[in-house]
Length: 428
Image (tube, rainbow, N blue to C red; front, top):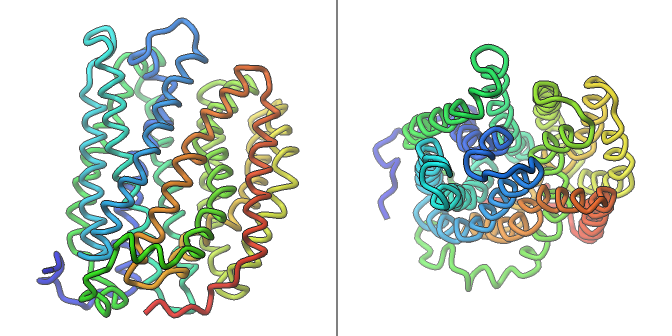
């Protein structure tokens, strides 16, 4: 099959390819995270209800349902990425994200079109879920394959950097609108549409940027294999598939606890106002962004297994006391420091999880092998983390969520102990 980049010179340096591959990833994750950042403002538009917690549960439920589309995206774009190229999959996925963002920006509220409003919102989130289902595996394979062997974790850590930077950008837009342009009533009435429209336009720019991606040598060497990306081929790698599920379980719940749920956790549990929670989360995300390449570089020296075991052990035993302390935080500074302590633990996982998964599979099935089991696990556990937490809180058992996160990380710890280190794997 003819590649999109056939007319492009293959002279891109590894550093240039890293930039080209990650900027589009940042924009796509911005589009996805804008929903979580602004959900407290547009909840009344789509779900009229006098109970703010019920509105938050409704928007969180759609956030979780969008995640259940990610396995479909993993199947579709995994096959494209393994057969037509990593660049082709990355380019098409960002177009789908653009469609979802613009649809949310333009959809009238419940007062204008009734039940159709939340239905369209759900459709848009499903499109974005399909997009991200294909984005993760393609991006993980691409970054690992273009990197020097002795710097794969460092290069791949920028996938998490852009995921976090996408959320930070979404929060940055929120903070700018909150503090300089719109008052709370304007944000609730119409201002929340601005970031979705901006996301759609940025996604178009990402599409144009990704059209120039050059395929890694690992893909080109196996491009003639007609069985690339097939499910029957994936079934030959049952152990690797189970490993991806196991190491993702605890990590994805912890990740979404400290990202998308943390904003609502601070607002509902500590009594901090919207502006304070936005600044705290933005600062903690910036701290996490700085940690990722540092931890990635460390993994290139000490290996993957020891890093994962560090996350598993610390996360299993310190998550409950950390979340409990955040719940009782009495000032923005105290909450910020505690959340940063959480990121010191989680980054042992987030900085290297993509490269570990890519190193588990051969090039012929790498995108599908990374994307599908990861997407299934994130759909059930990552995307539902916020909804589970709010459900426990609704019934007066918020501590149960802390135990839930700790047990999930403990299960992953067992997988980390049993797996072999993948640092020396030859990806070609």
